[in-house]
Structures are given as structure tokens and as C-alpha cells.
Image (cartoon, rainbow, N blue to C red; front, top):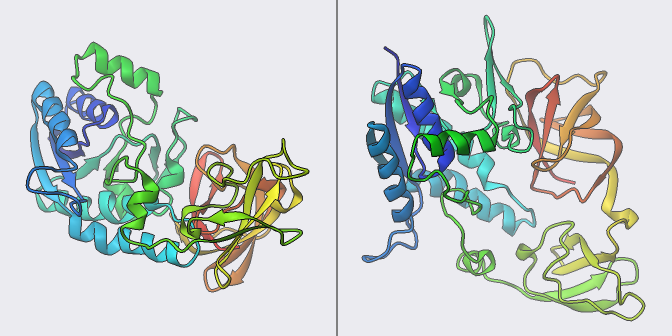
Amino acid sequence: MSQVIVALSGGVDSAVAALLLKRSGWQVRAMFMKNWEQDDTPTYCAAAADLKAAQQVADKIDIELLTVNFATEYWDYVFTYFLDQYRAGYTPNPDILCNSEIKFKAFLDHAISLGASTIATGHYAKIHHDATDAHLMLAQDSLKDQTYFLYRLNQHQLQHSNFPLANLTKSEVRHIANNAGLPNANRPDSTGLCFIGERPFRQFLAQYLPAQPGPIKCHTTEQILGQHQGLIHYTIGQRRGLGIGGMQGYQHTPWFVVTKDLPTNTLYVVPGHDHPLLWTTTLTADTCSWINSAQPQPTITYQARIRHRQPLQNCMLDPLGHNTYRIRFQHPQWAKAPGQSVVLYQNNQCLGGCTIRS
């Protein structure tokens, strides 16, 4: 009987993944990962509630729950990169590195060392195997599809992974959990940072990157409109939290971040969601990662998204060398954010992606 170790987080998705695997005849064990302990104290543990929920699920399903600590790996390979990108003026997405470096690397290696042939998670994505390769495919539930966060996975990682929720919608997952009497069936989904959780983000980031306030200027006139609280706290397309509403001539027009100038510590904004400077048909991206051996070709039309849940957009790629591409979209794209990812698709298959730079 094949052994699988499920990454049990305390949430309903991983709980149902474990339940379905046990029902289908796998030898199932579970593992809870603790990957953040920077603000733990002798009387407080940030992951305690999640661990308690995971243990309750394991007891209900009658599977063994193991625990492991990857806090060092998370700090070295995810969080330091996260901070470095913010220092450089980018808006990083830690969930992507969290998957490729922790869930499908540190966790996978540890599970294999314990005798498992496969790991499983509660991700909404599909894996299709052919004679030679594993292919990452869109999930059945387009609203929950998480391939955007999984594009950096490689063949070894996909060959040893299982996504039991591939053909389920979120409502079906909740239904299965309730019918099975799982104790976390109606537990809210986590929306915080990967493994760090939900917390006031500006205050959290300020513990590691001191804020440097500076001017907010209108991009077209250079007029000073207000003061920002540190460029690290803003991303392209951001509207909320600028504190510059009601400017003369724009009393009923919202302002949006359009660019950040690090040398002058200036945050530039433009009035209106549809301002031309917020739209573009091209972007440049590097640090590309392709799941299968075939590289994207400049003569083929692909689909891409520049943010999670965005509808797929037709595009073409121009190689620029050094693992860098110019991506040309058929239709203008709104608020490309340097540091985020552009992820490429073809025929419902995720091919990989790159980090947006400009």
C-alpha cells in the first residue's frame, strides 16, 4: 500500500484532502509544519490554534499527526527574499516561494525520508501524468484555482505530489467536511501571509524594515499631494490608505499608485482607475521558471495572468536573454506590479512563469 503524508494545516482544504485519500485506500499520515516562530513567547505560540485544529482533524479521521519545524528554512529561503524585494522597491509574493521552497521542497524531502512516496496538500490544482512528464493543470474550480502560486514547482516536486481537491469546488469541499463531521468544516479560510498568518501588515513589516516617510506627488504635475508612510507599504494600483482624497479639482476622483521612485523616496499617483499610465500592453520579466523542458516560443500565442484569479489574457513572448522576456498582451493590462509574477498557460496547462520587473 502506498504511503502519503498530507500537509495538515488546520484548515478545511487539507483536512478534506486527507479524508479523501484515506477513503481511497492510501496509507495516510499527516504532518503539521511550524515555519514561523519569531514572535513566539513562553506563553504564546502563533501556530497553536492551527496545530490544535489539525490534531482534532487527525483524531477524527484516525490518522497519525507528526510535527516538524522549518522555521530556519522559511527564514533563509522565503522571508529574507521577501524583505530584500521590499527594500528594492518591489512587491513580492511570499506564497510562491513558500510553495517551491518549503511545502514542496523541505516538506517533500522530509516526507520521503520518513518513507512516504507522495505528499498531498489542499491546493486547488490538477496534475496530469503522461509517459515522461507531470503537467500542472488548472483546477476544476476556476475561482479557487491556485496554479498561479505553484508555477515554480519542478518535475521532481510534481511527480511526488497529489492534489485530492483537483476536481472539487470549494462548496463541495465544505459539504464533504460537514457530512464527515470534521471539526473544522466551517473554519474560515486563512488570508494572511504564508505560515505567518493574519496580522496588521504595516506594523508587522515595520519590525523588519523601518518606514521612511516621503512625499506623494501627482505623476503628471509633480504637485505634492500628501505624505506616504514608507514606499514599502504601497503597491502599484493601490487606492486605499493614501490619505489624499478631496484635492481641488478631483473631489470625487480616487487616486491610484502608479510608480515608486526609490532615489527620491517619492510615491507617484494618478487620478482615476482608467488613467492611461495605469494600463500597458507590455511588461518585462525575469527569473523565469518553466515546469516542463519545452521553452515558450516567440511565434505562439499563450495565455497569462499577472495576478491571482485574473481571467487568462492572450499574449506572446519575446526572449531578451539571461532568462528574461518581454511579454506582449493582446489587450491592455491594468496596474502591473513589479515583484509580482506573470504566469503562463496553454490549453489549461500552467507552463511556468516569471517575476515582473517593469
